[in-house]
Image (tube, rainbow, N blue to C red; front, side, top):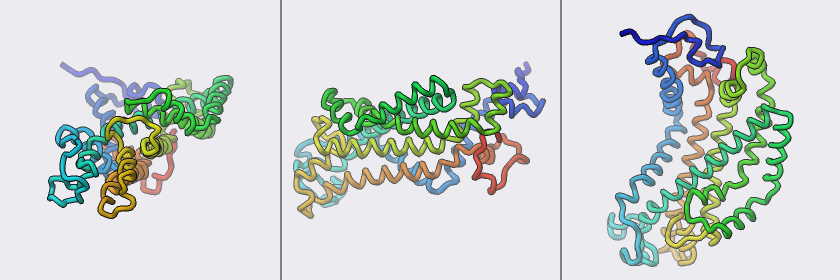
Length: 345
């Protein structure tokens, strides 16, 4: 039985720029092409960039610790071991030592990782989705829609962020890390929406966008095909910055005692307890403070490296060069990769 075939121009019905051949593709070839374009090619781009590889390795390490660590490593508890033990003082029994209550410091870091990752994902996704949606719609639609969304954005931007977070934390007393992540980024999306709107206003005047409009392509199709690829590097960097803001804000607010806790659930709690326990003044207790600080710094460093190394992933020309389903004769040279043209695929 023969497989059903479809014309090539039906692969992306809204993308008239790709309707250049009468050759037909089977359904299997169509799925293979999509998988190669959106999964394999971005993976090859990330793998070809050293900074992205290092950043991805660091992030995957934290994800693995967050997923598997609490199941494989003993939960920290009072009098778990000798008090204020130095790192490796008893071999690998307590690799990072213990605190003044005899709790394993490595166990505290591991068991605090899942909640931190949930906070980062919740805050980063909230900022990105809200900022990109509001900014793109406002900049592309114009008119009354633009005025209403711009007014909403301006109102949110005028609200002082830190006092708002403190008030919400006091009122809601969040125990769920996802809710905490949303509270920490409750008004951060407005700045991203304003910047995205400015970029969309500029991009929407380009000739390839006007050509798509003249050809009658749908608004969602133009936004997805012509607008978003040009702003995705900036969006990814913003996501990383939002994630880092969640990390620093949660650590700072837990340290100040603004966010409630009843156990060691955050690296900020560890810093607070280590400072209260004298880690800043007693050299033998310094490991208690250094361990959470180093953990926070390494995660932030990994996020920055990953964002810097993956900005090329959203360049259509670079993605086409790493796609095995793209005709080799269409491969651009290295000198072309700096240009991100939405109308050139």
